[in-house]
Length: 114
Length: 115
Image 1 (cartoon, rainbow over the protein chains, first blue to last red):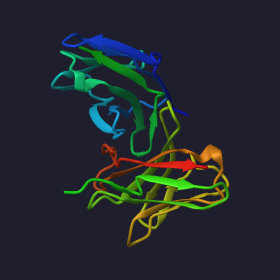
Image 2 (cartoon, rainbow over the protein chains, first blue to last red; image 1 turned 90 degrees about the horizontal axis):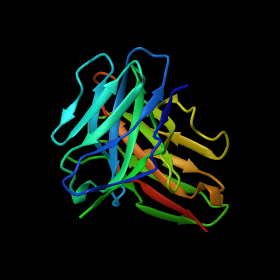
Image 3 (cartoon, rainbow over the protein chains, first blue to last red; image 1 turned 180 degrees about the vertical axis):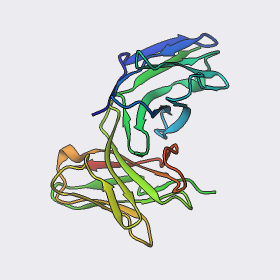
């Protein structure tokens, strides 16, 4: 079974600073997909970024980037130039290749302070 | 282009009643997933359905819970004889049929409260 671990229940960062959220996972699969979802106070689930395990290049979406270390089974999210609107719960998720159900970590609550 | 629509947004039931949660996927999506989120926890996978078929229900409790995705109409998550522990947010997600490994689009969830 796949497990996803987010070891930081809560984090805070000053506006305009950079913060990194950690995620590790356990799998015996060689090909899979990793995601970061954001859940703001409105409780919508918003896809932030996605990484395919067979791609070595780290995914980037504007201020959001990942550090994907396949051997270490680590998938951290870096948020640059943090904004107040980034305040949310962030969930790391794993999905096996050709299997659409995702496994989520317990989440990290990020607070961006003015 | 409507996203995943869930209704109701909030549902209150007394212990022993039935709860029906509805999910209309993104137009053209034929894969539907249900997740449960307890307070201060992550999402837990419950069930994965395609039209008229349950593909994976490994996350569904063995009793009182059922799900369907009929040929016509929304997907329904049904909880019979609800108990206090069923209080949670239930999220539905959908993905397109063409090619697996597509990101899932989430609805806004249904908050179920059991009195």
